[in-house]
Length: 330
Image 1 (tube, one colour):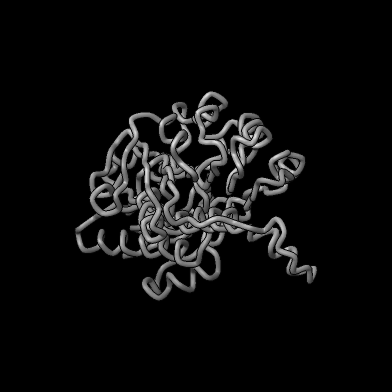
Image 2 (cartoon, helix red, strand yellow):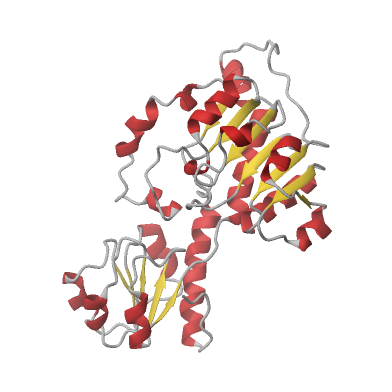
């Protein structure tokens, strides 16, 4: 099968060549001009910056498969692909445990005061005043969104012997059976009984500012809020109000509301994303300087294993298609 990969970094090309040594590789996005160099390909793999429209599709008469290395399909004209009999496969999941582990990294950093402890240690100050933390054992964690990532959070929390609450429109009975997770009827109930609340929801019209002042008024005093999902889930002004009024004792944020809208975390690693465009905007945000808040730069997804899983899934998608068992189709 003749295959072309676009938007690949050097390490990705080296990895993919082990499976497809005769494939063509391009670091740039697919453009109309480059179509001439791949006219005979049967499979095409791209990331989100390559717009696969009708004109490009019609210029590739032998194309049978598009294997996008992303979760979303927005950059591909699915209707034209369907008309032409071209299958489109994606990477539906790749970083569930990765993000869950980062959520717990933030939880542990807050619960054991890791950041101020390290800063004090670097200055050779071994005074323990103000560094006393708390155990996770027997604390209640509230998981908002018990999908793939939320399930891994529940698994880790179970290992810490935590009590686990969950809120989701869809209940997963397996989480109740395996980890003792109990679903609450409403979100305010979860906020009222949780010592630590962690968000694992997509951002859409229904979840925008789902954490607002009204909800935070129901929060158990002294609780901690973790967000490794999307910044827009939280009303930043309401969060600051809750922190300043000692309703929340702390927050661990891998995402902020002022970030640019992105459809794929991996965009943040791509040279086309302009980090400087929002660094200045975020720099003066109160949350970045707040003594009760830990902020990481949207890094929860960013592990070697997670990024390799994107490639492994893409390889699997192509090989399954070759063997007439297509998977992860749009």
